[in-house]
Amino acid sequence: MGSSNLIRLQKFLQECGVASRRKSEKMIREGMIKVNGEIIQEMGYKVDPQKNIVELNGKELKVNQRKVYILLNKPRYVITSVKDERGRKTVMEFIKIKERIFPVGRLDYDTEGLILLTNDGELAHTLTHPSYGIDKVYEAEIEGQLSESEIKRLKEGVELKGGYKTAKASVRIIKTSENSSRVEVKITEGKKRQVKRMFKAVGHTVKTLKRQSIGPLTLKGIEHPGAHRFLSEKEINVLRMYIKKKASFRSLPNGLSM
Image (cartoon, rainbow, N blue to C red; front, side, top):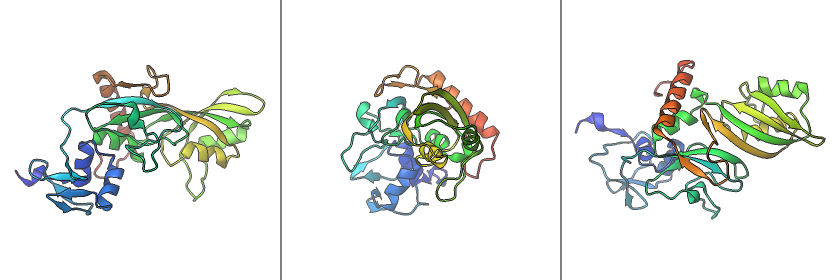
């Protein structure tokens, strides 16, 4: 085999369905991965899937042959992770299949709604990389009512703690009452606790939060928390076309592909 068969270790871990690229890099840094019996902690290390033996916790890893794409309606108080050191329930407990899969991106412990689980590392990377600007729609119940000026600030971008200003967002009031409001928010970023921090920046606390969609993927067919379903081939193709269209309107950094 020639050098053209070499791929980065973190990409190999992705393709095995071990974890996302970010978490795979963390596993490498923490010395959890062995290649040919030696612990590897180098980010740029490359392996040949046909020749090298890669192990996680003593178990040899193989690239998945069958790609799996599952939509889950994550309930509240569930961790978006393959496992949790504190013993809390994770999204993996709702899906029983033989393939190794991992959640794409994350939802907060107390946030419910749509999340994709897969063993397709490349697709996962494009869906989570900020350069692609994937639309994510949330429905939030907040304390109080938004003023016109607050709505304008949310739409134009608000400065979060730490000096980061959010990108433009879409905001739509669904329903208001004396003490609370239901608001739909569409963002193209994925900063930690972003929607909650956006509302906090304009003076409102989020009481409940639910993700309704990711790009063309919605909760249709999995309306009940904890329900899940496999994506059809047609839906996967639609998702790839959506990503390709998004990428065509943006300047992607070197190394990214569709």
